[in-house]
Image (cartoon, rainbow, N blue to C red; front, side, top):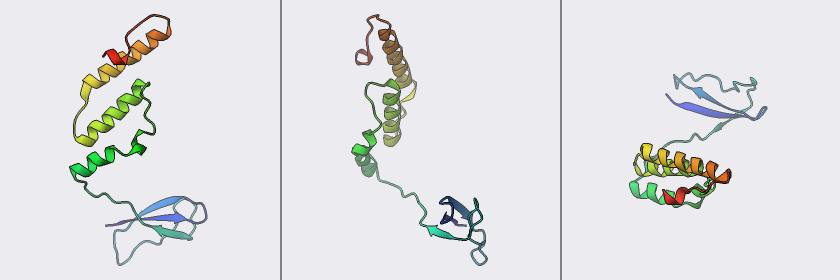
Length: 120
């Protein structure tokens, strides 16, 4: 049972249509505005990657675009993404370390001298 995706030329929105019977498919039309002026799109699909390909994709500079090394939350998200990619659970230790770093950062703003993430 395929799901076909369409782009409406009238409103510009995408819609997906589940086809239960290939011999008698439902009419292609926009589910948002009702227009019949739709173009069928190529759907995305998943392809399994080898471990080497997954690790190679981690070195792509596009993965570092939203990463801010000075923001503990950004670092935690990045580490979780890396852990997921290599099949490792960063777990509670990483979350605990990021919370400590955030607390240190906030305390440092109030004028007290505290250790930052580098000392963890």
